[in-house]
Length: 308
Image (cartoon, rainbow, N blue to C red):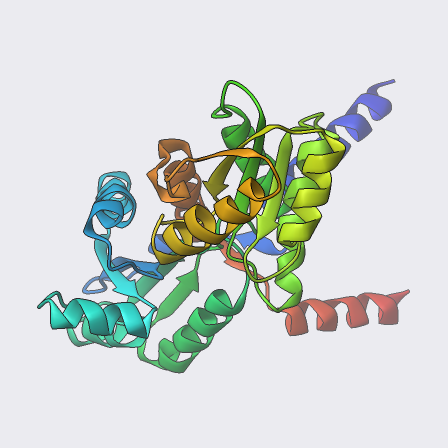
């Protein structure tokens, strides 16, 4: 009996550790624990960016402030990845650095340990670009780690669905419209939609502007639901250009031409305190965990096979 209890406890512990390490992709490791006298640590918040001052204050500026409050031990800076946004803001005398320039500036100021946390939604082309930028400058730092986007693990998607469910409108169907991408990462949006349906949220749908699920996919679901009223909600960090043109413009008009009554909730995900907290938790997670090197992991498996 005692053996059985011990075994059950061990099973539970291993299940917990898998969940805590995002599918065993990560191992426990505190970045600050390895610091020596004279070392300096910083958190770089990386945003796609927006030229709209109103939504920037509610999303980007708000999460930067939240990060400063959450990590008093770190110097908190920001960078923008959209070159177009950076250029347009520069014309208005607002200076924003891209990730490489922001990281080199930190290096010049003697920072040795860096956490990079982006406000990207999926592990798409923006994250790929950011990971490459970080690889380029990594030799200049003792250690540099990248936090995951909002939707990385299955648990992340479940957490977001819970937040969105708590904010649903009183009546009708809700359509969350993401940017979408031409890479396999567009499957993340389909997973969200699937998860909503699996949770009996039959009036919740996810579509994308430039990926899958498409507008037609969503329209077919709305017709199946015999929907009359729809609320469109951006599934984007800021309610900027895409939200104003593609969602409040094209999607709204196209749905109305199909006989639906359409409201638009012009609110970026980054305005929602619970979503801001999910990003902060990702930054905290990467402070305390390190992504495993897949080559080393496979080498470990090879050794195990050898021993069998």
